[in-house]
Length: 343
Image (cartoon, rainbow, N blue to C red; front, side, top):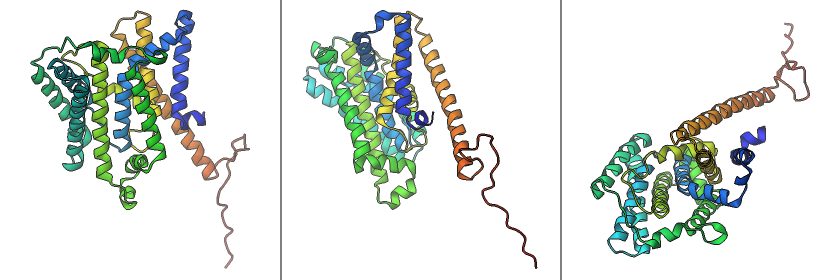
């Protein structure tokens, strides 16, 4: 149990296996690589958003505007392609839009010192409004086949965009765990004052986190446009909450400084897996959010209770309340009272 509490990635992985086992038990025909590939393809957007959200949350901030950034970036790539620009230029344009949106969020939080939740709530509406003004509320349709081909299965049944998602996750996980650049994110989120004393560029790190988050949201918008083939005027709505939920499920702390990108990836995969299972069993769509929210609350409540119990046990051992070999729970006084000295 202690191992599961300390290793949230393992907990999320076991939850994925358990849900997959339930799916196969109810219908053995779903035991195939095709089912696994389908779930991964559906989870790519949320994985990208969860990785970006994790970077921001590690610095003890939060960004609730990424859903609108996804929609704005999807609109950007669609408009550019329909205007006759090449696919690489259109993708770079969309990534630039996402980076600018993320950097603006960072400027509000770091430069103007507005609380992150307040600043990004404002830009949530701002970017959504810009998206609707740009398109006049219309859908972007008629996207060229070149974009759609990026989401078609290629090597080992994984699309080029799927390969890119895995590369981004692997590179980010390596950078956070193996480089000084990555460790700065943890230092900023864990103890801001100590990070400054150690010479960490706190403001720069937070700006980078928001900017990378915006770029990853733009990547998610490109994946969305490639998979769907068109861009509705409500693209990205509600995705910001799912991204945060995926991070929490994967062990990213809302208080900053704790968690890994692999955990965020697994949390995103698990949430998508729930939606996919409901679709496979043809349950009404309105059950998706209810069941996903119920599972998230259950995991958080159970995790909180277990952590409290573990913390109490560790404190008892530390201060000598109980000794490991004492099954009877006999009280042990850590500091025996001294005998009163006779005057």
